[in-house]
Length: 459
Image (cartoon, rainbow, N blue to C red; front, side, top):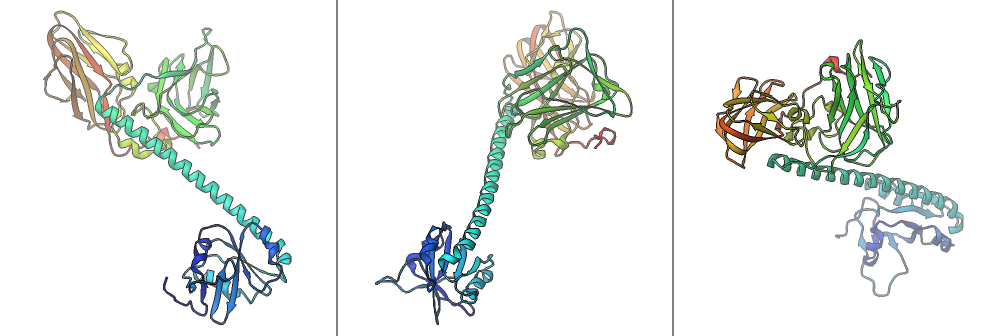
């Protein structure tokens, strides 16, 4: 470093002492004439003596060496000095100002007759510095944990997106909790505007991909469902389901991707919304005070889904909304044949359409399409026979008729201009045939649609 005197003060140190001054470990700067400095060696920091001279101040960790090079002028004050100890405040007062000139908080200045007299105040300063360091360590650990969680989430999302774009089937869900409905027909009734029902299923949050609730009858009010982390109180995922989408039977609510992050105890908040009406939930046979429900999980990166009735305001990562995602399970599960042919029960990601002898044309109408989609892709695979197909969106837009090659998945893609138009596949051909229909892939708009004002959750 080139020698350069600071205004009114020149601070130097031997070259051999520079690593110890700037290695970040705590240091106590003591005036070299202070008696009883041996008492300070138990204060938890190294002792550096300040030698005052007409030329300035020289900082040393030991006595002068016989073959010592010329001291180096310090351009910046050491960052880990706990205190400056001298017999009078004026002796090292100018040295304390050196820290201020460097934009740093100056160390504690202790005036004492000797090292033993300075020890109580020095220990107080050391404990305060240790407490501040512990708090900084905790903050850094929290940041590291958040970065690790973000990296794991990003890796899982990228893996799921690649599987979705490639048309690979996601892994099968594992049911972690299954509370069957009470055969006696017991119900839990949620009145619109009443306090929410909070359920504690007794399971952790990571991996949750689907929540299913059973309704014994059609609902007369909207239903708000929230997945909450008990320890943090955060809403991890939420849905708002209108009354028209609450018929009797099982209601399946999917998460955009398996929940990640730190494991927390799961809480489920259920609330009926609206000016009047109620939502009836079937009671569980094993616990009549709790609703019948089922919770399924997937490994990280299992899939990306564009769920129905999703409240995106409570989702943790808005940026991932624009990624290609699978259509909700209801879209394929509720598909119906309008014409010859039968659909099997399917495996969740695929259903097979069996076409009899003598069929000429048929149509498969899919279930509801979520709002906010920019484009739709549907893959078809001919297992046997001769057939051609086209994809229709909204009853007007349609792809050209394309021959289906046997045992090869063929994609059909169309833009989506309306909010949530009807989606159907038309087929024509001769002779018995079998066609596999895969879960559609949705290409969402840049941002999710804003919820309707009447669907807003009351505070």
